[in-house]
Length: 393
Image (cartoon, rainbow, N blue to C red; front, side):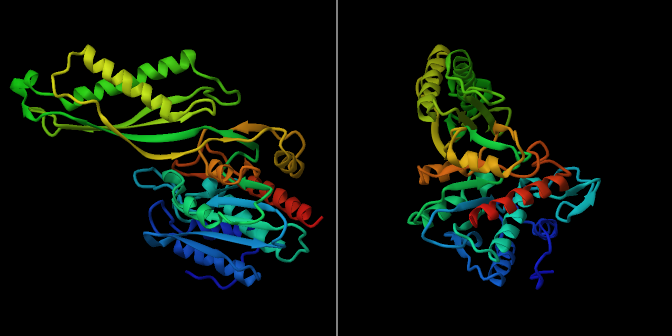
């Protein structure tokens, strides 16, 4: 079925195509990027591909249309989707199904709907007398910690001038997202001593050490809840600490020698994950001493697996006002409960305003029978059409 020679007529047509590419995180997205590149080149726009340095089957894409000596607006999206295995889909996951005013399929909301609208906006902009550029930034492996976009941002480090505004098109129901928390993910290795469980008190139990760590996470979370900084606009207005996985032991009659715990910190702007980690380590050590752990027991070895910064854009920033002018009156500002690549763009270009705004709802993302309302795609198309008009004035 690939490549298709003809250009799609609408964003919905392109969305149907994009859903058919099973671009699951950590798997190839090269065919999808080849199709987008083909569409851009046919419109006279030459894209730049930035591959994963370790695997050429996955890549980022950057393209720009219009003048290059003035700042413009960048449309940012990711092309990867989460897996579907084990989910009870009632429609084919990688085939667009239209019913009841919705398009069903993996990635329809998160976030191939926005990607389709953004690509079609680029094609439309290529036919217009732009006075400021419209730019497109598409990434890979966003779902595992905004991995791919870091290579793209490095490739764009010398981009001059930097964009006025970056619109990250994660699903917000077309509300204006001005913030999200940062995230730091950690892996803790708890070491013990293997031995016969009949003599268990003679050996350091790695799982017991892990429980001291988990108890410390809960202690620190309680302290943050009671005394930590608050930030308005979030469903949970303070930093959260969460243990996600725990794996340890080999058999019931063997004292476990190793246990691994994965945990995360999602921080408001006023908190620093490294300071919170220090408290977790201190509290774990205190818990172990309180439990009179055997000599030789070591505090878990903790490594950071991944981290991305939070996003915080003032509600009265010029970029926010510009986006608001392209949307229906009284469109809400919001702070989203999920992470995005936006904080990395904000970190790269301190004077660039970054917002999150895209079609669909995060409530249906990552689930079986993910969908986007057709009216949401139409609303995004309308917003981007007004943006192109603005870039011509």
